[in-house]
Length: 554
Image (tube, rainbow, N blue to C red; front, side, top):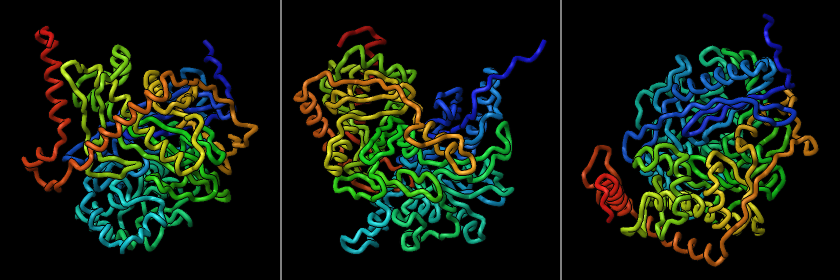
């Protein structure tokens, strides 16, 4: 029997999307932007101490290889020849930091995740070194001093991991965000792997000058980081190296973007003033400010949006970053057991259609934009005997929308022209209750693409458009039309304002919970710093559980 004829679909481009909760590999047609196949692997996070968040770099790398191979198998089952894949792009969780041995390829320590809070004492010591109100760090990086960014994570590792200190002294240590670790590994690792990053990821380290797009000696001296362990900074669309093993052996890695920049590109926000909001582990609103750096007066970040080639001009963005969005759903699933799958939250929320006065501020890692308040912690308030897990589920979804309202308001103040609609993407946008809530709370239309994988699409576009690849045109007339779904506000503006005002009252109550520094070892006095919401939620969960077990109505 003759082998089935393989479908010819023209040049294809792959995209690795390495996120906090999962890794995905997706393959697109460069001519139509159609998604042809993909595979996803969920990842584990370690929480070894209060406020610490880590991941295993080797698990992350293995998940990339697995996703690539499984996707290629699926393409073969569709009779699509994987040799049609002409390039691969990489998109990644941005500030998460890895240090590894360039002689063995082994990480010296777990990756410290962007949400990690252990560096607060490091940060406080560094802030004392800045004279008066002269915050040169923000003027040169666009970023506030925060536990969020890579430089303080690296400083903590250098101060606390003797193995790393020794490796730096011996010239064996390589530093990177997740993109650097992946590209170095898949392009050969110890056998000639390319140690690099792109301008978007470099801009999130607090070590790169946002104006020159180069590592800055003054910043490296301030954080006491040796410059020789840093990697080369490239544009977002360039051939960095070639894959050395597996089904895509020999194919170029030619696109690299931090995940939020990739989503901006995937949403085709190439014009100044265009914006998108991505709903993932966190929530990230980016507005393209063109070729000029715009510094925020309302708590937003100035960041690099993308640089579409080595000889192309850079584009900048204003960014509002929310630490906890999709992560609150995972917390309800994994920590409280209210739901068994993330998808169940939509059903719970739909069944009640209201939070019944319950407000949930998920400040698990403090508050990010626009407050930058590390002392905040999560609270749930407005509970009564009537409150059920359905109301808590609804309040969790509302919390994502309220946090988006906060950063959208800040964006409107900084830009001077309010957004008339909000383009959205990310896995959470499949939740229709969330999307309608978002339109209601913002009181502007929310526009969702029919294909929500815009982060992957952006990485694929950058890879396919790279010089030497040239299978994806970024000319406006050549870009594929993306079909959109529109959610219109369904409540009065006055109701939206009342709910938002109550939310802000809850946010104020979440601040200042952490008033003492946690010691290295466990300490029972930690409970004096826990939010009241922690005890209320515990009581509520026991109450709800008792109700179902005993059949008694309270």
